[in-house]
Image 1 (tube, helix red, strand yellow):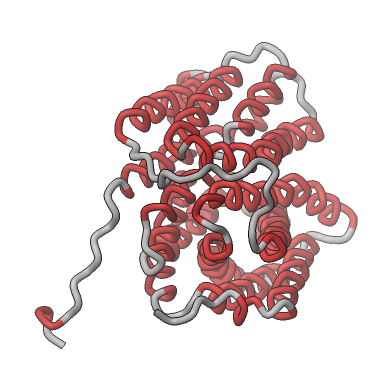
Image 2 (cartoon, one colour):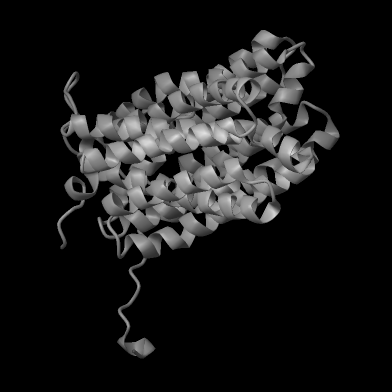
Length: 394
Protein backbone atom coordinates (compact mmCIF):
# COMPACT_ATOMS: atom_id res chain seq x y z
CA UNK A 1 0.00 0.00 0.00
CA UNK A 2 1.38 3.41 -0.96
CA UNK A 3 1.55 6.29 1.47
CA UNK A 4 -1.22 8.05 -0.41
CA UNK A 5 -3.51 5.03 0.09
CA UNK A 6 -2.92 4.81 3.83
CA UNK A 7 -5.59 6.17 6.12
CA UNK A 8 -4.60 9.52 7.59
CA UNK A 9 -3.64 9.56 11.22
CA UNK A 10 -6.23 10.96 13.58
CA UNK A 11 -4.85 14.13 15.18
CA UNK A 12 -4.53 14.18 18.94
CA UNK A 13 -7.34 16.04 20.74
CA UNK A 14 -6.72 19.69 21.48
CA UNK A 15 -5.21 20.14 24.90
CA UNK A 16 -3.84 16.60 25.20
CA UNK A 17 -0.16 17.59 25.26
CA UNK A 18 -0.89 20.21 27.91
CA UNK A 19 -2.39 17.47 30.11
CA UNK A 20 0.55 15.16 29.33
CA UNK A 21 3.23 17.71 30.22
CA UNK A 22 1.35 18.62 33.42
CA UNK A 23 1.40 14.97 34.51
CA UNK A 24 5.03 14.46 33.44
CA UNK A 25 6.24 17.49 35.43
CA UNK A 26 4.24 16.33 38.45
CA UNK A 27 5.88 12.90 38.29
CA UNK A 28 9.35 14.40 37.79
CA UNK A 29 8.83 16.18 41.10
CA UNK A 30 7.75 12.90 42.67
CA UNK A 31 10.85 11.23 41.24
CA UNK A 32 13.06 13.92 42.77
CA UNK A 33 11.73 13.29 46.29
CA UNK A 34 11.26 9.52 46.59
CA UNK A 35 14.83 8.20 46.11
CA UNK A 36 16.34 10.52 48.75
CA UNK A 37 13.53 10.70 51.30
CA UNK A 38 14.75 7.78 53.42
CA UNK A 39 18.28 9.09 53.79
CA UNK A 40 16.94 12.59 54.44
CA UNK A 41 14.69 11.28 57.23
CA UNK A 42 17.66 9.67 58.98
CA UNK A 43 18.94 13.18 59.70
CA UNK A 44 15.98 13.57 62.05
CA UNK A 45 16.60 10.28 63.87
CA UNK A 46 14.20 8.15 61.81
CA UNK A 47 14.65 4.38 62.11
CA UNK A 48 14.03 1.99 59.24
CA UNK A 49 10.57 1.33 60.69
CA UNK A 50 9.84 5.08 60.74
CA UNK A 51 11.03 5.46 57.16
CA UNK A 52 8.67 2.69 56.11
CA UNK A 53 5.76 4.50 57.72
CA UNK A 54 6.90 7.77 56.16
CA UNK A 55 6.38 6.22 52.73
CA UNK A 56 3.15 4.52 53.82
CA UNK A 57 1.76 7.85 55.08
CA UNK A 58 1.78 9.25 51.55
CA UNK A 59 -0.22 6.29 50.24
CA UNK A 60 -2.63 6.34 53.16
CA UNK A 61 -3.43 10.01 52.53
CA UNK A 62 -3.85 9.26 48.84
CA UNK A 63 -6.14 6.32 49.69
CA UNK A 64 -8.51 8.65 51.52
CA UNK A 65 -8.35 11.68 49.23
CA UNK A 66 -8.11 10.27 45.67
CA UNK A 67 -11.81 9.27 45.44
CA UNK A 68 -12.84 12.60 47.00
CA UNK A 69 -10.78 14.60 44.49
CA UNK A 70 -12.13 12.48 41.65
CA UNK A 71 -15.71 13.09 42.71
CA UNK A 72 -15.00 16.79 43.19
CA UNK A 73 -13.68 16.94 39.62
CA UNK A 74 -16.96 15.43 38.41
CA UNK A 75 -18.78 18.33 40.10
CA UNK A 76 -16.64 21.43 39.52
CA UNK A 77 -14.38 20.35 36.64
CA UNK A 78 -11.01 18.69 36.09
CA UNK A 79 -8.91 21.86 35.76
CA UNK A 80 -9.49 23.44 39.20
CA UNK A 81 -8.91 20.11 40.97
CA UNK A 82 -5.64 19.52 39.12
CA UNK A 83 -4.45 23.05 39.94
CA UNK A 84 -5.40 22.65 43.61
CA UNK A 85 -3.58 19.32 43.74
CA UNK A 86 -0.42 20.80 42.25
CA UNK A 87 -0.50 23.63 44.78
CA UNK A 88 -0.84 21.02 47.54
CA UNK A 89 2.15 19.13 46.14
CA UNK A 90 4.21 22.34 46.18
CA UNK A 91 3.24 23.00 49.81
CA UNK A 92 3.97 19.42 50.85
CA UNK A 93 7.40 19.42 49.21
CA UNK A 94 8.27 22.79 50.75
CA UNK A 95 7.20 21.62 54.22
CA UNK A 96 9.38 18.52 53.81
CA UNK A 97 12.39 20.61 52.78
CA UNK A 98 11.90 23.10 55.61
CA UNK A 99 11.33 20.40 58.24
CA UNK A 100 13.21 20.69 61.50
CA UNK A 101 11.70 17.62 63.16
CA UNK A 102 10.50 14.17 62.16
CA UNK A 103 6.82 14.96 62.73
CA UNK A 104 7.07 17.79 60.20
CA UNK A 105 8.29 15.28 57.61
CA UNK A 106 5.16 13.23 58.24
CA UNK A 107 3.05 16.36 57.87
CA UNK A 108 4.68 17.10 54.52
CA UNK A 109 3.99 13.56 53.30
CA UNK A 110 0.36 13.79 54.39
CA UNK A 111 -0.12 17.04 52.46
CA UNK A 112 1.68 15.62 49.41
CA UNK A 113 -0.28 12.35 49.50
CA UNK A 114 -3.62 14.10 49.92
CA UNK A 115 -2.77 16.09 46.78
CA UNK A 116 -1.75 12.98 44.86
CA UNK A 117 -5.16 12.38 43.32
CA UNK A 118 -4.29 14.69 40.44
CA UNK A 119 -3.19 11.72 38.34
CA UNK A 120 -6.59 10.04 38.31
CA UNK A 121 -8.21 13.42 37.54
CA UNK A 122 -5.77 13.87 34.62
CA UNK A 123 -6.68 10.38 33.38
CA UNK A 124 -10.34 11.38 33.53
CA UNK A 125 -9.53 14.55 31.56
CA UNK A 126 -7.87 12.50 28.82
CA UNK A 127 -10.87 10.17 28.67
CA UNK A 128 -13.13 13.23 28.39
CA UNK A 129 -11.49 14.52 25.21
CA UNK A 130 -10.68 11.19 23.52
CA UNK A 131 -12.92 9.14 21.30
CA UNK A 132 -13.31 5.47 22.31
CA UNK A 133 -10.93 4.52 19.50
CA UNK A 134 -8.29 7.05 20.60
CA UNK A 135 -8.56 6.42 24.32
CA UNK A 136 -6.27 3.36 24.71
CA UNK A 137 -3.49 5.11 22.82
CA UNK A 138 -3.79 8.32 24.81
CA UNK A 139 -4.03 6.49 28.14
CA UNK A 140 -0.91 4.52 27.23
CA UNK A 141 0.98 7.68 26.30
CA UNK A 142 -0.06 9.26 29.59
CA UNK A 143 1.31 6.19 31.35
CA UNK A 144 4.65 6.82 29.64
CA UNK A 145 4.86 10.01 31.68
CA UNK A 146 5.51 7.74 34.68
CA UNK A 147 8.69 6.47 33.09
CA UNK A 148 9.77 9.97 32.11
CA UNK A 149 9.28 11.13 35.69
CA UNK A 150 11.29 8.29 37.17
CA UNK A 151 14.08 8.69 34.62
CA UNK A 152 14.52 12.47 34.95
CA UNK A 153 13.43 12.97 38.57
CA UNK A 154 16.25 11.08 40.34
CA UNK A 155 18.85 12.69 38.07
CA UNK A 156 17.58 16.20 38.89
CA UNK A 157 17.34 15.31 42.57
CA UNK A 158 20.91 14.02 42.63
CA UNK A 159 22.23 17.22 41.09
CA UNK A 160 20.14 19.39 43.42
CA UNK A 161 21.44 17.48 46.46
CA UNK A 162 24.92 18.86 45.70
CA UNK A 163 23.61 22.16 47.05
CA UNK A 164 22.50 20.61 50.35
CA UNK A 165 20.05 17.99 51.66
CA UNK A 166 17.08 20.39 51.68
CA UNK A 167 17.56 21.69 48.14
CA UNK A 168 15.94 18.80 46.18
CA UNK A 169 12.68 19.30 48.09
CA UNK A 170 12.72 23.03 47.36
CA UNK A 171 13.34 22.25 43.69
CA UNK A 172 10.38 19.84 43.69
CA UNK A 173 8.23 22.51 45.38
CA UNK A 174 9.25 25.15 42.83
CA UNK A 175 8.57 22.75 39.96
CA UNK A 176 5.07 21.98 41.32
CA UNK A 177 4.35 25.68 41.82
CA UNK A 178 5.38 26.55 38.26
CA UNK A 179 3.36 23.58 37.02
CA UNK A 180 0.29 24.84 38.91
CA UNK A 181 0.59 28.32 37.37
CA UNK A 182 1.08 26.86 33.88
CA UNK A 183 -1.92 24.56 34.37
CA UNK A 184 -4.08 27.46 35.54
CA UNK A 185 -3.20 29.34 32.35
CA UNK A 186 -2.98 26.62 29.70
CA UNK A 187 -4.88 23.55 30.88
CA UNK A 188 -8.27 23.18 29.17
CA UNK A 189 -11.44 22.28 31.03
CA UNK A 190 -12.53 18.94 29.61
CA UNK A 191 -15.58 17.99 31.66
CA UNK A 192 -18.74 18.30 29.61
CA UNK A 193 -21.32 20.56 31.17
CA UNK A 194 -24.26 18.59 32.48
CA UNK A 195 -26.12 17.66 35.63
CA UNK A 196 -23.80 17.06 38.58
CA UNK A 197 -23.85 13.53 40.01
CA UNK A 198 -26.49 13.18 42.70
CA UNK A 199 -25.04 13.17 46.22
CA UNK A 200 -25.00 9.64 47.62
CA UNK A 201 -25.76 8.04 44.24
CA UNK A 202 -23.98 4.79 43.47
CA UNK A 203 -21.92 4.29 40.37
CA UNK A 204 -23.51 2.14 37.67
CA UNK A 205 -21.65 -1.13 37.09
CA UNK A 206 -20.42 -0.85 40.68
CA UNK A 207 -19.70 -4.57 41.00
CA UNK A 208 -17.47 -4.40 37.92
CA UNK A 209 -15.58 -1.41 39.31
CA UNK A 210 -15.12 -3.14 42.64
CA UNK A 211 -13.71 -6.18 40.89
CA UNK A 212 -11.33 -4.03 38.88
CA UNK A 213 -10.24 -2.30 42.10
CA UNK A 214 -9.54 -5.65 43.77
CA UNK A 215 -7.50 -6.85 40.82
CA UNK A 216 -5.65 -3.53 40.67
CA UNK A 217 -4.86 -3.85 44.38
CA UNK A 218 -3.41 -7.35 43.90
CA UNK A 219 -1.29 -6.25 40.93
CA UNK A 220 0.02 -3.19 42.76
CA UNK A 221 0.74 -5.25 45.90
CA UNK A 222 2.92 -7.62 43.86
CA UNK A 223 4.81 -4.89 41.99
CA UNK A 224 5.31 -2.81 45.15
CA UNK A 225 6.80 -5.89 46.81
CA UNK A 226 9.23 -6.22 43.90
CA UNK A 227 10.19 -2.53 44.01
CA UNK A 228 10.75 -2.59 47.77
CA UNK A 229 13.00 -5.67 47.90
CA UNK A 230 14.77 -5.85 44.56
CA UNK A 231 17.74 -3.83 45.81
CA UNK A 232 18.17 -6.33 48.66
CA UNK A 233 17.69 -9.27 46.29
CA UNK A 234 20.19 -7.82 43.81
CA UNK A 235 22.73 -7.20 46.55
CA UNK A 236 22.54 -10.78 47.87
CA UNK A 237 22.35 -12.61 44.55
CA UNK A 238 24.28 -10.36 42.16
CA UNK A 239 26.38 -8.07 44.39
CA UNK A 240 24.56 -5.00 43.07
CA UNK A 241 25.45 -1.64 44.62
CA UNK A 242 23.16 1.38 44.96
CA UNK A 243 24.48 2.70 41.64
CA UNK A 244 24.02 -0.53 39.69
CA UNK A 245 20.55 -1.02 41.19
CA UNK A 246 19.66 2.48 40.00
CA UNK A 247 20.82 1.50 36.50
CA UNK A 248 18.52 -1.55 36.59
CA UNK A 249 15.54 0.61 37.55
CA UNK A 250 16.51 3.10 34.86
CA UNK A 251 16.32 0.25 32.34
CA UNK A 252 12.90 -0.78 33.67
CA UNK A 253 11.72 2.83 33.35
CA UNK A 254 12.91 3.04 29.75
CA UNK A 255 11.08 -0.18 28.86
CA UNK A 256 7.91 1.15 30.47
CA UNK A 257 8.20 4.37 28.44
CA UNK A 258 8.66 2.41 25.21
CA UNK A 259 5.77 0.03 25.89
CA UNK A 260 3.27 2.59 27.15
CA UNK A 261 4.35 5.33 24.77
CA UNK A 262 3.99 3.30 21.58
CA UNK A 263 3.70 -0.47 21.93
CA UNK A 264 0.47 -0.45 23.89
CA UNK A 265 -1.28 1.81 21.37
CA UNK A 266 -0.43 -0.54 18.49
CA UNK A 267 -1.59 -3.62 20.40
CA UNK A 268 -4.74 -1.94 21.72
CA UNK A 269 -5.73 -1.09 18.13
CA UNK A 270 -5.88 -4.83 17.41
CA UNK A 271 -6.66 -6.43 20.78
CA UNK A 272 -9.38 -5.07 23.13
CA UNK A 273 -8.23 -4.13 26.61
CA UNK A 274 -10.36 -6.90 28.14
CA UNK A 275 -8.28 -9.48 26.28
CA UNK A 276 -4.95 -7.68 26.48
CA UNK A 277 -5.05 -7.33 30.27
CA UNK A 278 -4.90 -11.08 31.12
CA UNK A 279 -2.03 -11.48 28.64
CA UNK A 280 -0.18 -8.69 30.45
CA UNK A 281 -0.81 -10.32 33.84
CA UNK A 282 0.58 -13.59 32.47
CA UNK A 283 3.79 -11.80 31.45
CA UNK A 284 4.10 -10.30 34.95
CA UNK A 285 3.65 -13.73 36.55
CA UNK A 286 6.31 -15.21 34.28
CA UNK A 287 8.69 -12.29 34.86
CA UNK A 288 8.48 -12.41 38.66
CA UNK A 289 8.88 -16.20 38.70
CA UNK A 290 11.94 -16.03 36.45
CA UNK A 291 13.50 -13.25 38.56
CA UNK A 292 12.90 -15.30 41.73
CA UNK A 293 14.74 -18.28 40.27
CA UNK A 294 17.51 -16.39 38.48
CA UNK A 295 21.08 -16.88 39.60
CA UNK A 296 22.79 -15.53 36.50
CA UNK A 297 22.53 -12.30 34.54
CA UNK A 298 20.96 -13.74 31.33
CA UNK A 299 17.99 -15.21 33.22
CA UNK A 300 17.63 -12.08 35.36
CA UNK A 301 17.50 -9.86 32.28
CA UNK A 302 14.86 -12.08 30.69
CA UNK A 303 12.76 -11.97 33.86
CA UNK A 304 13.03 -8.20 34.22
CA UNK A 305 12.14 -7.72 30.56
CA UNK A 306 9.04 -9.92 30.87
CA UNK A 307 8.04 -8.10 34.05
CA UNK A 308 8.56 -4.63 32.56
CA UNK A 309 6.66 -5.38 29.35
CA UNK A 310 3.83 -7.02 31.29
CA UNK A 311 3.55 -4.12 33.73
CA UNK A 312 3.72 -1.63 30.87
CA UNK A 313 0.74 -3.31 29.19
CA UNK A 314 -1.23 -4.06 32.36
CA UNK A 315 -1.44 -0.53 33.78
CA UNK A 316 -3.05 1.24 30.78
CA UNK A 317 -5.23 -1.80 30.02
CA UNK A 318 -6.73 -1.65 33.49
CA UNK A 319 -7.35 2.10 33.25
CA UNK A 320 -9.10 1.56 29.91
CA UNK A 321 -11.32 -1.10 31.48
CA UNK A 322 -12.28 1.36 34.25
CA UNK A 323 -13.08 3.99 31.59
CA UNK A 324 -15.30 1.50 29.77
CA UNK A 325 -17.22 0.64 32.94
CA UNK A 326 -17.77 4.18 34.23
CA UNK A 327 -20.21 6.80 32.86
CA UNK A 328 -18.61 10.08 31.73
CA UNK A 329 -20.25 12.11 34.51
CA UNK A 330 -18.77 9.79 37.18
CA UNK A 331 -15.43 9.05 35.53
CA UNK A 332 -13.32 11.07 37.96
CA UNK A 333 -14.86 9.27 40.93
CA UNK A 334 -14.33 5.85 39.35
CA UNK A 335 -10.67 6.53 38.53
CA UNK A 336 -10.09 8.00 41.98
CA UNK A 337 -11.57 4.85 43.53
CA UNK A 338 -9.24 2.77 41.38
CA UNK A 339 -6.23 4.85 42.43
CA UNK A 340 -7.13 4.38 46.08
CA UNK A 341 -6.95 0.60 45.59
CA UNK A 342 -3.41 1.05 44.25
CA UNK A 343 -2.57 3.06 47.37
CA UNK A 344 -3.61 0.14 49.59
CA UNK A 345 -1.29 -2.12 47.63
CA UNK A 346 1.59 0.33 48.03
CA UNK A 347 0.95 0.53 51.79
CA UNK A 348 0.87 -3.24 52.38
CA UNK A 349 3.29 -4.50 49.73
CA UNK A 350 6.66 -3.25 51.05
CA UNK A 351 6.32 -4.39 54.70
CA UNK A 352 4.93 -7.79 53.71
CA UNK A 353 7.72 -8.25 51.18
CA UNK A 354 10.38 -7.18 53.67
CA UNK A 355 9.06 -9.63 56.25
CA UNK A 356 9.10 -12.47 53.71
CA UNK A 357 12.64 -11.53 52.68
CA UNK A 358 13.86 -11.74 56.28
CA UNK A 359 11.97 -14.85 57.37
CA UNK A 360 11.69 -17.04 54.25
CA UNK A 361 14.43 -16.18 51.78
CA UNK A 362 15.73 -13.65 49.29
CA UNK A 363 13.62 -15.15 46.51
CA UNK A 364 10.33 -15.18 48.43
CA UNK A 365 9.01 -11.63 47.68
CA UNK A 366 9.37 -12.23 43.92
CA UNK A 367 7.74 -15.65 44.04
CA UNK A 368 4.99 -14.39 46.34
CA UNK A 369 4.38 -11.54 43.87
CA UNK A 370 4.06 -14.08 41.07
CA UNK A 371 1.53 -16.07 43.11
CA UNK A 372 -0.50 -12.95 43.98
CA UNK A 373 -0.53 -11.82 40.34
CA UNK A 374 -1.54 -15.33 39.28
CA UNK A 375 -4.45 -14.99 41.71
CA UNK A 376 -5.45 -11.74 40.02
CA UNK A 377 -5.26 -13.46 36.63
CA UNK A 378 -7.43 -16.32 37.92
CA UNK A 379 -10.07 -13.80 39.08
CA UNK A 380 -10.03 -12.11 35.67
CA UNK A 381 -10.70 -15.45 34.00
CA UNK A 382 -13.24 -16.70 36.56
CA UNK A 383 -15.19 -13.45 36.28
CA UNK A 384 -14.92 -13.73 32.48
CA UNK A 385 -13.67 -10.19 32.14
CA UNK A 386 -12.21 -10.66 28.64
CA UNK A 387 -15.70 -11.47 27.35
CA UNK A 388 -17.82 -9.22 29.57
CA UNK A 389 -15.60 -6.14 29.27
CA UNK A 390 -14.90 -6.31 25.55
CA UNK A 391 -16.95 -3.59 23.84
CA UNK A 392 -18.74 -4.59 20.63
CA UNK A 393 -16.98 -3.80 17.39
CA UNK A 394 -17.91 -0.46 15.88
